[in-house]
Length: 112
Ligand SMILES: [Zn+2]
Image (cartoon, rainbow, N blue to C red; front, side):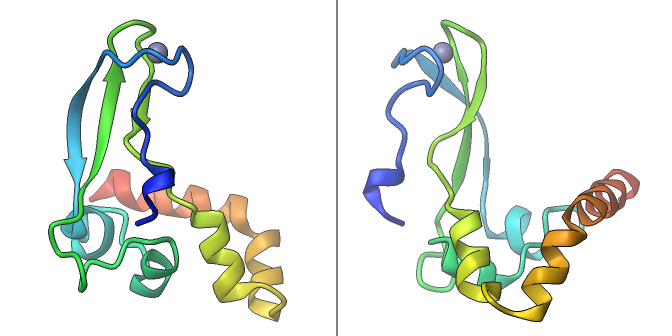
């Protein structure tokens, strides 16, 4: 993962006073049926290659000053989608149905 994408301060108030709330690794992001179940190819394109870096964790932080929750890094998932699906018919269809997919994914996670 690109070091420029690591956050060292709150993205809202710029405070450096924040605490980790939870961390998410390969199981939560990629393999567990109760997790996000992101495609491996999408994760790799976004800089999350769990085969090369099995200890990679994404941490949720809570800012002690303003109270917002934020990830410890910027995950360029839109760039990953563009690399994988840009200019394809599938990409066009995904763009048009992204709201529906979000609802389906969220419902699936709530049920599990
Ligand atoms: Zn803050």
